[in-house]
Amino acid sequence: MTIKTDALIIGAGPSGLFQIFELGLLGIKPEIIDSLPAPGGQCTELYPDKPIYDIPGIMVCTGQGLIDNLMEQAEPFNAGFHLGEEVVEVSCEDDGFRVVTHIDKVFHAKTIFVAGGVGSFQPRKLRLAEAAELEGTHVNYRVKDPAKYAGKRVVVLGGGDSALDWALELQTAAEHLTLVHRSDQFRAAPASVARFRERVEQGRAAIIEFGTLGALGIEDGRLVSVDLKLPDDEIRTLPADEVLAFYGLSPKLGPIADWGLDINRKTVNVDTEKFETNIPGIFAIGDINSYPGKKKLILSGFHEAALAAFAAKAIIEPGKKVHLQYTTTSPIMHKRLGVED
Image (tube, rainbow, N blue to C red; front, side, top):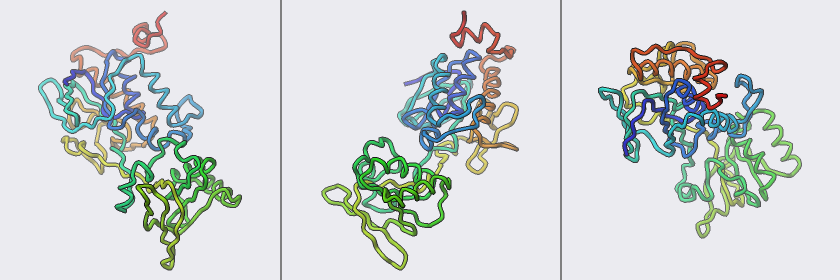
């Protein structure tokens, strides 16, 4: 399958989705690729339910709420979405770039926008052979369906925000929930830790500190217990139906590192006029890029997307002056947005 496009966006997180909007305002219909099965990037994968307070004009929204709004905002521009695909090859051509995904889909793009956050996220997994055997059934590193844990004996491993947030969320429906942390110092928000300790005091949950996972008990392919290693070589066995491990996520640049870009400690160096990389026609926006004074904020990615779009327009239509028009008054903008009278 071969697709020709003026603009190809790699990464469907907040910056990538807003890049659709900024390109669309300039009359450019992009294609967008993401290795995840749904748009959203970190917002969807890491904090779909957590509140965000620093989006201009929006007092508060959840991570998933922001993604839903960005998808709705981008809808008039009919971008082509290619989800669950990873870019494995980027090469220069006379009139742009050749991009190939892992399923051998080929794109010929005049410009590329790398919006891959800090790379693809891989959970830090349990180093037990039996954990790999149960992964996706009784051992998981993210919660896809909270209802799955209703009436179950759940063990949550970790001491960060994800561990505490899900322990609080699942405790009400689980038959019993135990939080296990290797220390008594938590990385999670103090308010979350306090709330969970309250539930422990009420007898609604349990907490084990200075504990690490030692082994999993399996019968007929099902998890039935976990062995915890405690100080002084003590082993405690807990009945368990489900294990959720939140030991953090490890970002990996992946194939981006082999594209010939100027890599700076797992980020891509760009200028601050166009947010263009060392390869003309390839831009990098959002957390993936690096420049003096860079701040890894969602609103920074939005600003970068706007300037990168104008720079790309000049490449796509060389010699044609790019006029700045305002969505408030421009009939052309209104037509593209589908809001003309």
